[in-house]
Image (tube, rainbow, N blue to C red):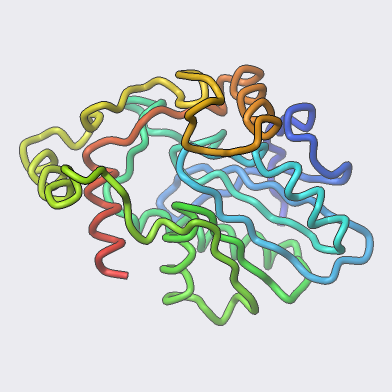
Length: 243
């Protein structure tokens, strides 16, 4: 099966020398970007499920380490982020109507992996939101994966001491009142990496990793993503509670 080439910023990713990046399509027509980093004699394949606001290039150095350890690495930009298709009403907004949409991305990714005969065993690494999506994928298609690793999985969201008891209700009410496509309070279209400095950031304790990520979003604005919508938060809470 032929897959059209997709853009990939190897210069920003600092990843393995051997790679291929393609477009795939979910069964609802959503266009998705995938990247496969390879090595000559792979032990198997590691599927990388990224977090919210993330993108394939952010995992370039991790892919390099995994490839050096003998693994092929397959990553995807979830719908609405990276180079994958974004919502027309606001490409910078984190938006889905329900988390089941991400499972369509999973299905398309697995179909792609099978079409290019990626070597097994297949191992999943799910980070943050990718941990939530990955856990659901295990319920649906657990027989596809041999081993799973979760990194800070999004199985709950910390909204703050005051907001925690009310956040899910506020999100639900916001959607019911017609604010599904509006940003939640304190969120905007601004990319978090460009809003502040390393000191006090919520993403990393490593200054070099901070510079790596900032350089990426400064180097390619297509990689940037802003805050979540009421719809995304409501869908996330429903999914986490159900899991």
